[in-house]
Image (cartoon, rainbow, N blue to C red; front, side, top):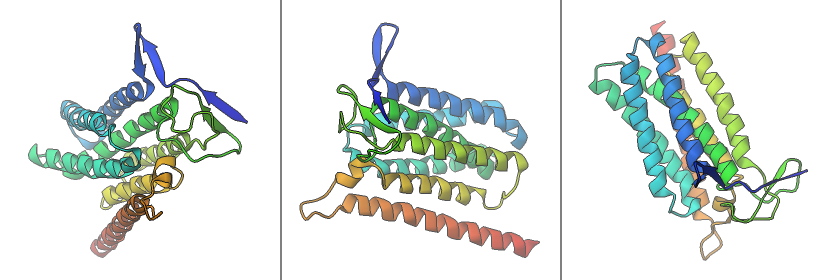
Length: 250
């Protein structure tokens, strides 16, 4: 069963806009609204949370506009870099304004993951960041005029798969947040899970897979995979260390 998409651009008020850009803006708004809604349970002023998440997410949207011109096989690394930069910003902003940096970072990562859900949905509609050629069930065929590198060829819908994984991660984040559990190691846990989203997604992403150097070795993909795995390993070690520390205090 194939699904053919001709979307790529959407007409809005008589003008054409990228489906990716539109969904990214919606994701930014959704991330800010969700974080503001959750702020009360951490005794954080909603006005502060609004400004913090809006600033970081809007900066991320602007950064993506600048990196959109770089080769697609470099995008996974830029996403990982964006994750660490946004986490650092949330921690610094919380510290500067006298609030718990951990609470600010937890809310911030929830908003970032919300934004990424919509962003990846935008990728799916626009045809960018698509998967490898795939003729199985639910394959996607993009028409000419989309951002697909392989128009007319059945592809694996890696963008939708990542949307599903990230939405499942968001539900887990909200459960942990509302139950106020694992506070001692929640940030490394989130970083670990979000890094793994990048790692497994790259294994099915067409652009990193096909990018090889003159010797036929895909150094870009190898570097990105090692970076993703290294991030997950480091975060896991932090998680175990924090858990052991918490048991020692008990």
